[in-house]
Amino acid sequence: MYRQEKEDRFGKARERMVSFDLRGRGITDAGVVQAMSEVRREEFVPNEYRSQAYADGPLPIGAGQTISQPYIVGLMTQELKVNRDCEVLEIGTGCGYQTAVLSLLAKKVYTIERLAQLSESAQAVLGRLGFENVEFFIGDGSCGWPTQKLFDRIMVTAAVPRIPEPLIGQLVEGGLLVAPVGGSGVQELVLCEKIAGKIAERGFCDVRFVKLVGEHGFQE
Image (tube, rainbow, N blue to C red; front, top):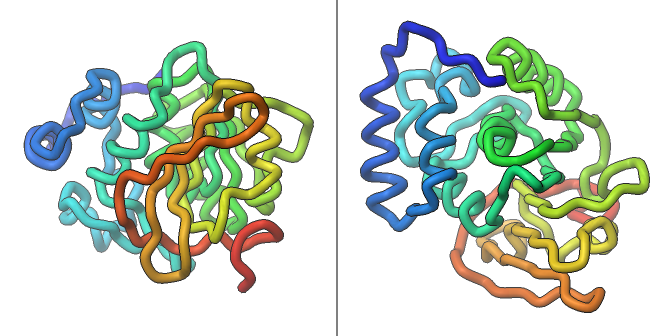
């Protein structure tokens, strides 16, 4: 289980994030708010950006990638309606912050990252902090989990031109998927529900994400 450390010099900044950037902007799901009040965001950003860990904006994490702003993390997680019965597939481990939030809400998180250095760093941080219900894979996330498996929820944390077909195939009937869909500039966050084998989509927010590079995503 996730272990809280005794010393918490970022505590007040985290409280402000929860009050203003989450609750103040409509993130009302109690589980999401509680998870984001527990996860130490400063542990997932490079040392030179630690002072900005709780600012409501993205931050560089290396390799041309970013950690999403807290509000967007909260919004995507809230829309996904994760509970303790859910097995969740995350496409784009990045630094592991979103993975940590999901792991406090889900039965288990399966997470894929294309860049080995990011996955290995995330594994180290999540392991050190005591997150145990996470399984990692390094590879092309647009192709889905490498073995035959179905997921109750899928979260894509990088922009895709369209919902990748392999992900639709790995979503259970009645399952939910959230992803930023669009071009390499601005995308729309889309919530998808699988009904009778097909996807019903609802867009709800304009965003800017880095591209998901892969066979069913963007080219390099």
